[in-house]
Length: 464
Image (cartoon, rainbow, N blue to C red; front, side, top):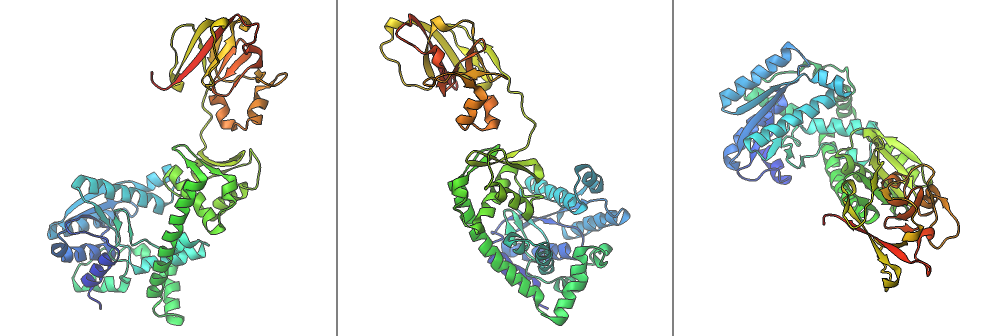
């Protein structure tokens, strides 16, 4: 048997998992893998100056056995002088409430606990006991699901604060180590029954491959996933660069320029979309190949084409943009403010101020070109001027054009996205639109040679 502390130390160095003096929280289930991990890290503690803690989740899946797991963990940590944090949480009930699988719910609560403990004790690393077998099973399961390179990279040896020091250690080595050191770990009997897909891969498929095709399949798949992980990192870096070039990202949506998207190589195109989704929601939970393909298909469709993705994401075409946004219920953008002369009319919801003042037309030397300042003929104003957004049936007479058109048609002609139209403010005289702020003045209200008195409308954005 290999010297496990030495193998683990080589793994730590290879993936740059630890620095001298790090604080490490070990995710401790009480099973062979996590008990081996904790014991090995204790062996390396002095060399690396480690401060070691443990965290255990009693998930309440296995009743009395789960309680016994927690007791075992407490006793072992007390024996070894390790501070341990045990949380009891009804994961089955949480999974049912959130509509998650047992595995998803358990993972979510488990990692939440690990991060909370790390913050509490000031640790900067979280050690998880995934091993070489786990990685091989993951690669094969993802292959069977038709995963791309992202899935075939397997389990990452290091991701942020998460480290997996046993990733190059086989399960039989772990079991032998536990036996040699007299650790007597807890055994989850469900892992020994071929009743789930992953268990069948572990208990039936991999042994069959080892016997008939490749006795070193574990090492082969580990090497394969290492190669894929490196190439995957490179492709992700390239996709990140492309995203900056083709998209505008803000907190609520991502807008991709369709013309630029058509120029991206297919190997990067889907990644650019995946990365965008992850930036928008913080995860890729539930996002599958078919979902990404449905978004790619939109690139060849016209305005209004849309699909709904997992995590309540809406992908749709808006003129020359592919937009990803969280699919929320439309907000009520109805806004109405009567404007008064010679005072600050503050539209707080929109962070702007409107000022009106009158001036004799003969005193206007020159009309400035400023999209937030206009001059209108006061003699043509029939009612009180108001600041509002659009209403049904609005008609507009854009300056420079003969006749009138529906405001909706004007927005379409100007290629203003449907989701932004209710947010555009305008100044109206009764039912007549005088000015669409920052965009267009009405032909009916423009200054002419016959104008005797004018109104200067000035919009100031932001704080005064």
